[in-house]
Length: 210
Image 1 (spheres, rainbow, N blue to C red):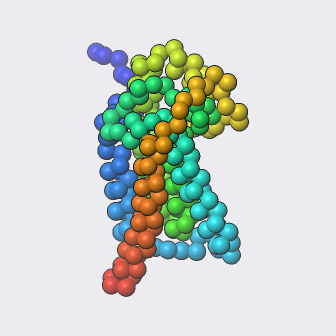
Image 2 (cartoon, rainbow, N blue to C red):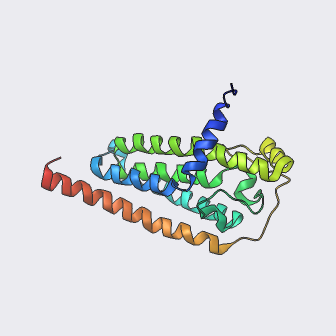
């Protein structure tokens, strides 16, 4: 009887299967949000400050994603897990998964701008579902691809909580500006999602009464 695989390996196996569908998971979450979203006064008497802080989170997340994409290269947007090289420079010198960290930051900002606590629950569910599977899958691939070099990188750079100072052995490479184009499109997509959810909420309340 074969021994059961460790839990991390099971998550990695799931992550490999859902990696190419990660965008579809996000779009499914948006469609679900359109059915339940209702604008609310999320921050009470501090609504303006809350909105400004939320917008700053979105901008910070977009900026970090663009920085990380430019340092890693265009392969980060492909449908399969791949890495032509081990990226350790730029934001990767502070944290191993800066693109995912950036997505978490901007997602939290979007929740604040939308102002609906239900969106916070959906946000948590989506990110936990995706990243508890995808991150182990990517780490398993990188361990196989880069061996000791990746093990040394992992020993010095945290997975999601950044170091205060960059890793001294980080390798800086030329910045790939073309890889950041997708994040400019993402900014437009976020605006469309924000407007679309408010439009869906208005139609539901106007036509259906809920």
